[in-house]
Amino acid sequence: MNIRYGRRRLAAVPLWGWMVASSCAAALGFALHLLSLELFSNWSADQIANSTVLRPPYPLHVVLIGGLTSMEYGIALVALYALLYAAPRARASTRIVLTAALGLAIKGTLLRAAIMNLAIGLPVKTVVLNEILVPWGTWLAMTALAGCVIELISEVTRLSE
Image (cartoon, rainbow, N blue to C red; front, side, top):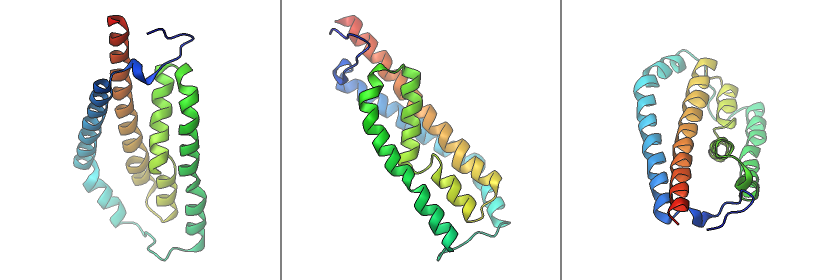
């Protein structure tokens, strides 16, 4: 397969390669999820127990913050669409970071979850751990593993042609 000007095609990786990369990423994500539950659940519960957390119906400022931060979903979808055009020229590390960030944004955990949990009164330490460090680290690790597997399979497939 002739790939010119750094252009990449989905066909450069066989279907089984995409499935292997997906399985690897999913398994890593699940393992990190279980690990974070084991390590941080009790600590987070203790932090929340000592806090005053707002309950529905939320005050107007929380509703306004929710409306504004929901833009994260729309921006992520438009960026993902644009990424289909831009990614073929990007380096693997750039694609990994962009894909992880877009995955987080589509879930609403890039910024929105942290901002909303701060708005309702959860402690900053709890929000940083549960809404930033754990999900960002998990998604970046999952995407890095999937990206590396895809790059490896693409290169092996290219060399075997």
